[in-house]
Image (tube, rainbow, N blue to C red):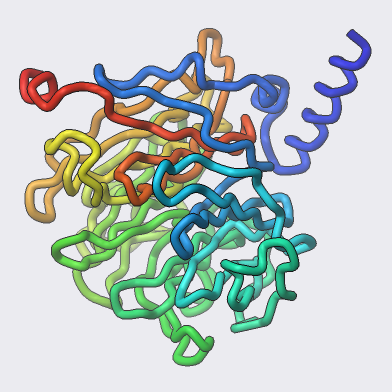
Amino acid sequence: MIRSLARRTFILASALALGLPPAIAQSADDTALERLRMPPGFTAELWARVDNPRAMTLGAPGRLYVGSRAGHVTAVPFDPVTMKAGEAVKIARGLNMPVGVAWRKGDLYVSSLDRIVKLPAIDDRLAAPPKPVVVNDRFPKDTAHGWKFIAFGPDDRLYVPVGAPCNICDRDRDGYANIMRMNADGSGLETYARGVRNSVGFDWHPKTGEMWFSDNGRDWMGDDTPPCELNRVSKPGQHFGYPYCHGGDIADPEFGQGRSCADYVAPAWKLGAHVAPLGIRFYTGSQFPDEYRGALFVAEHGSWNRRERDGYRVMVARLEGNRVVSYTPFIEGFLGRNDAVFGRPADVQVLPDGTLLVSDDASNAIYRIRWNGTRQAAADR
């Protein structure tokens, strides 16, 4: 009992250091696996144990890389045929909230608060990883919303969000609350989208090539407002409202005076308030039933300041063209009775065989979701 108490105390202290509320921290050592609920025909397995897993990216065949808020980056080698994961290996330490990871031509790019670094030729150097090389160090040093999801787009440029350094404020429109992009060597840094409070996940539509991104809504306007958002970028330079307008039609009580919400791009879909959408991915595999082709999976990390918790699930948005027509739960069970938290989904990633990985930074786990049903059963639903 003493050993168990000591372990829980350590986990509580670690979780609080990462910004988790006490109620979440106390249950962070429990696995959510046995509680997960999915549509009929789907099963989940514990694929890998990783310390504080956040964003994920695939490298060369048999390599998955995982960022964290805890200062390290992890590699998970896996069999390219069976997809069975090997032992996780930490390949970088001592970085400042290296949440974002992006792989390009053998190099791993990592976000580290005020800079982007890369680990050259990492795929074959897991046992003796190279030192990080600075690619660009021109980003703000603010901790608030400073951690960054990153990814290379269809144009081979690296996209880097810069969150607002506050809950609600109007600061340097070129320096904060936007999504930026740059060349792989760090040159050509420019603003791609404005009025984005805090995006921690984006992906590109497999047919149109348009960027879709999640955005976390502001706090302290009540339990049910404003909504978090799922957004679509139809052209560079668009403004998505922050800090003047939220959810497409809610003027901010402080900064919205004299502004019209019609001047900004409305969300493609309004999510629940405070559900904290993080990683999103279009499903490009074929292992799941046909109805999931082109659907968008969204990891809702879960609320921290709502009287009744919300989020803590993986959702699926189905599209017709560039329009969202439904938004429904895909994986539930991370949130139990009496607001007990057993896990917090942070990102989703499609494996080469079409199965889906889900990172859970509260349970230090990555789950693999597989379809085991029949095509006819899927068609009958």
